[in-house]
Length: 334
Image (tube, rainbow, N blue to C red; front, side):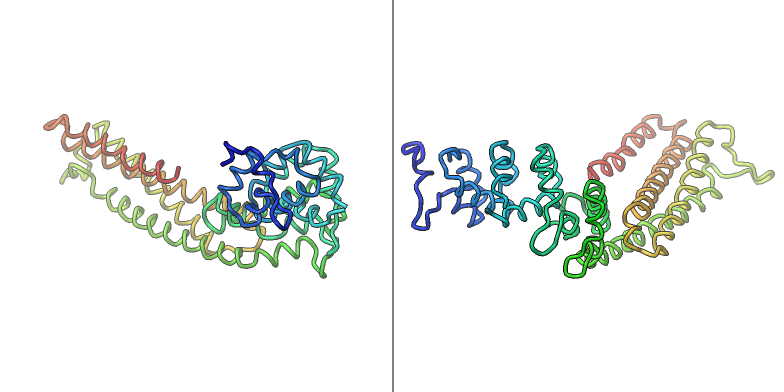
């Protein structure tokens, strides 16, 4: 229809709204995306463009693409005081989405308006950064604890660039920090539960690895001499590989247990989610992965000790198969 009649996107409804505006109000993302490409914004009135901008910001539909025009940004800045809801929507979107904030921050006049604007509720950009982000932004990372970390990082960065006095400004009796704590209370609790569950499961795996590699150290492949108790295959290079790998697996799995234990005994304060808990989690998972790799290496070395003299091809096949868990781990986490 548009190909046959290019003026269709400019026909107004009984309410005086264009198809683009109606689609945005109805949250029809695919239709909004199409109409954005065929509607000449320059042929719309100033009020129509502002209303469309407010609608797309409200429902988070194509707002970034519309804002990605110097003309629209300048218009938004000029009309912010004839239109207060636009200022608030711009402020809220900028305070919760890095991509929109970075785009607005590049324009000096709009940046000044965003950073210093205070609405009728006495809320500034730090207050709005204290609200819980929409699920589309939270789901960028998995796990409530890491989502809490992301929220804390964004709030801290916003505090750095906002006016210092705004940090103590109160809205409904709450400072930006108080508002952040209130709005993130449920995410905080979910993050604590997620972190404890993850630490528990990983500690079980680390304990099993510790038990296995500890027992393996005293039941060396090939057995020991009945006279001296010295391992029969002691002089073999593969025996050294076996013992070193087994020791690495034992020490790293033991370290992993202690790290995850420290997570379980943490206070789980709000600031712990910023650096302490995520760092411990990464370190614990790293040592756990090292222990798994050491256990696999010890198994490969044992296969070479037992089968190399009789079946040369078997150890080679086993080495190839040993790469499967590593590849699987990388793919799953990627």
